Image (tube, helix red, strand yellow):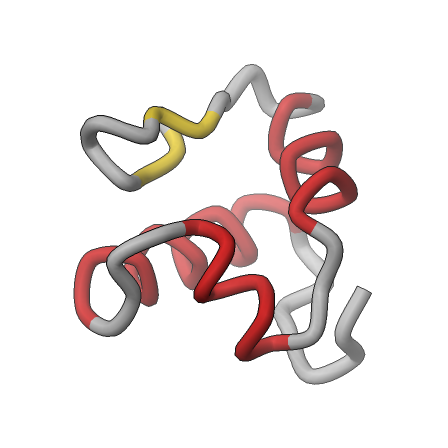
Length: 60
C-alpha cells in the first residue's frame, strides 16, 4: 500500500471516502492516482466491516 496513506484503518477509511466524495468518480480512479491495489484496499477496510458501494461511490 502507498506509504503516504494513513496507516490506521479508520483514518484510511475516512481519507479514502473523502477522496471519493471530493475528487474521484470511481474507486479505480482513486486507486490509480494513489498507486494502490483496489483489492488490497477493499480487504483492509473489510476488516472494519466496510464494503465499497459503487452506487454511492464510498465505503459503507
